[in-house]
Image (cartoon, rainbow, N blue to C red; front, side):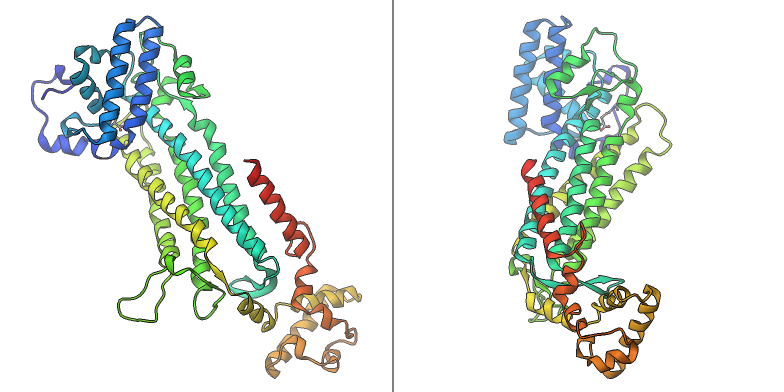
Amino acid sequence: MSKLWGGRFTKKTDQLVEEYTASITFDKELAEEDVQGSLAHVTMLGKQGILPADDVDTIKDGLHRVLQRIKRGDWEYAIADEDIHMNIEKALIDDVGPVGGKLHTGRSRNDQVATDMHLYLRKRVVEFVDLLQKLQSALLEQAKANIDTIVPGYTHLQRAQPILFAHHLMAYVSMFGRDAERLQDSYKRINTLPLGAGALAGTTFPIDRHFVAKQLGFDRVYENSLDAVSDRDFILEFLSHASIIMMHLSRLSEELILWSSTEFRFVELDDAFCTGSSIMPQKKNPDVPELVRGKTGRVYGNLIGLLTVLKSLPLAYNKDMQEDKEGMFDTVRTLQGALQLFAPMITTMKVNKDVMRQAVNQDFSNATDIADFLVNKGLPFRQAHEVIGKTVLYCIQQDKYLLDLTLEEFKQFSPLFDDRIYEVLQPANVVNARNVYGGTATPQVTDAIARAERELDAT
Ligand code: ARG
């Protein structure tokens, strides 16, 4: 079969070259976007009098039929037709005859493929914002159910200060909120139309780029035709935002894995989200968070891959740029899978409130608070820190916790202690003492939950 660009050639393309250069095996995913762009383009060609109305109608009808066939699976692509753009054009010409060859007037595959990618990512960004918000809602529900659950808070993975488990979960609500915001911020750059740039320099036909933009719902058009066909920044932005989301998910994954170990026993993931061992009958493995943690690597890889493809690439289009697709599709699929699983996994997670509470009673995470107690009695903080350090060391040597000490024992370290310290040291009081905006005290976390819910409802 002859090539759409075959005129200048006297020899057949080498079979291996055909296979090596073709992108149809993966860019067939852009079929719908490709037809959508072509419909807007050909409508504009008609409006501008570049094509007669009859031809426009014939081409449009043909494009609709081709798309229906692709959707039904009643379509076979040809490697020889290289990519989705030429496969569709070929199918159109087969359907409507030579008039189908008028579709590509005033257009190049270079501005066409860029348009398809913009249309594709525009849809994905909206879907990802929705998935992130569903995950935020799941975390918010767990936070509400754990507004009175006290758990050790950690720094260096060493117990630091007690916090509400709700407060810990709300940290992730903030993180995923920023992720959604980042995607929304990038929307205005994604929603910019490259079509009309031609191969690189514009076109000799009197096209109307703004009319095409309007039909396709783009807010603006690229200012410069070379930039329009060379730009893949919008994909890089998406890949880096996806990397940050996966990084957040991997941190939560790591915590879920730790928390569901026998050593912690803070949570239990639902059976539906775990798998067993083929040899050890007792095992219940947190495969989902483990795999999300692991798949974070490939999402980072896709970002670094495309950054490297684009590095030092001269303007304008180069075939290297065809390498923008597989990594992007892979990232979309990986991120979809992770976000879709995470929301129900959080919703069905069992929180062992008693184990958490018990953990708080068996640590020194209230030590800062007796230091603050001495500061309130007038002792400089640095000296109070020293006194409490010694008190903790004494406890460790005596195999006791701070609440086990008698007032006499406390007084050995400072005469400023009085029996009010037993109140101060209660975990609930330690938590509620941190009553600053954004802190872990119950009223603050309750407000934070209400604010986050209002924000989610507003979107
Ligand atoms: N399949 C190509 C890609 O994905 C489409 C653009 C081809 N343009 C060209 N001048 N060969 O990048």
